[in-house]
Image (cartoon, rainbow, N blue to C red; front, side, top):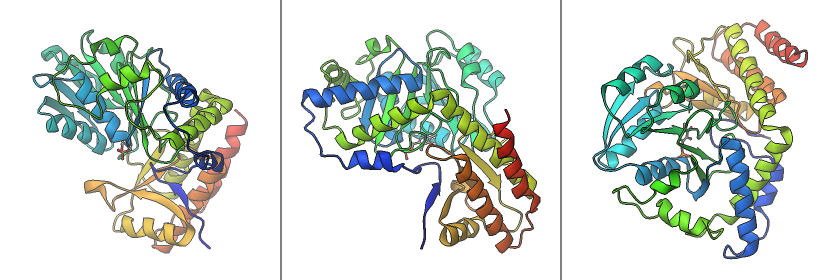
Length: 378
Ligand SMILES: *Cc1c(COP(=O)(O)O)cnc(C)c1O
């Protein structure tokens, strides 16, 4: 028997309470009942983003949310600054390129977060319409300091943040941190199936809708705003995913949003201490709460190790992306993951490493337990 548990940074494990919501009978969306559930979800999400602004729910994966930010708020002759700290920073660059927007890219080696003084220098040098970046860079398990970045943003430059994998795993306060636009998705920290993207706009920013000159249709928030005012979406919404979203938001609220973040911090702390004790090296110099990336030991094929651990134990870690395939292991502990889950996953990592000839110190498992025990005494 194989019981697969996801330790991948999307999709993540979906609790049965949420799965069952998806099995409810689909209602028609041009109804009062749908409006009520949509508005409830929008309100819950605004709490998660910590904004007084509006949140739009899109039927797409997270990248659709990123594209929505671009097509609605940028124009052809704009200059933008991209803070590229990995595969998803590169995605911002690819999206703006597809629309012919001029971008300066501050590119960092994978595993590093952006440096504020570089951004400051760029902002002094040139006037940008927007700065685009990630709160959590999933490809490297790195967190960026959005709070500090928000503190140095010029008044008329938009701060556009991708928090697809970091909403509900990292501390984040959209309004307080001066973020104008933030994007997230359903299949990561929100412990839902894939299929929804969310875009939150700072209060008042919707007045800018329709002023840009980029082509858009499905992702045009001009349509979405007009519908939103009637408690609707412009196109057929993913009704069952919205049932699930409300359940997820309810569960997160019940745990307490601060406690959710703390749980992620705790799991990250167990994972980091344990892998280091095993004799592995962390990949990121600014590791995130939702995902721990570790370097594969010299001479070992990381892809084989990851496949073996999944085949044998049903524990699915994620491989490195692009040039880091086979070179790093990404242990995601985001969403529906608890302390016992991460302890189990680390045990399986230990077993896998042993199988491939790496002598991970057995004391590492005790370190995992003692770190977990220490959490209770805080
Ligand atoms: C997952 C993810 C996305 C979106 O990916 P989709 O596959 O389109 O959902 C964007 N940014 C980050 C940081 C992500 O982790």
